[in-house]
Length: 145
Image 1 (cartoon, rainbow, N blue to C red):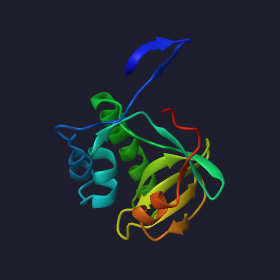
Image 2: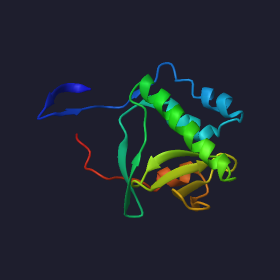
Image 3: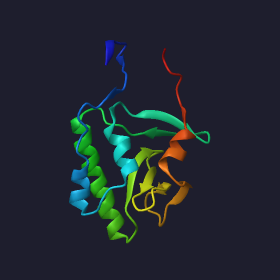
Image 4: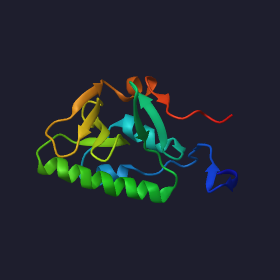
């Protein structure tokens, strides 16, 4: 947090993680290696989630504010993975929220970015990898100087 809160809001700045959180716990719990792009996304900096645009559609890029966020992310990913197993779909790791019913995820095998609509069969591929996807994103709000 940068400065004092004003009108119930605060300014913040992402900061590097001096010691990355151990998200490999998730891989151990699921008994699968996790895609390195997904791990990198969540283990390089502390930050609030970021509102971004992709092809004129807004979404929230999830980030970790603190270690409790990391624990919550792991718990939610386990629930997501168990549902994927239940419906016999490949493992995906979500990283963005579009709305209450759609999320952005990474195919854990291929690294492709996918748009998933909860309760439907099969996600839609958006880009072949996370770097391509994030490179095409723009901030949804003006950045403060």
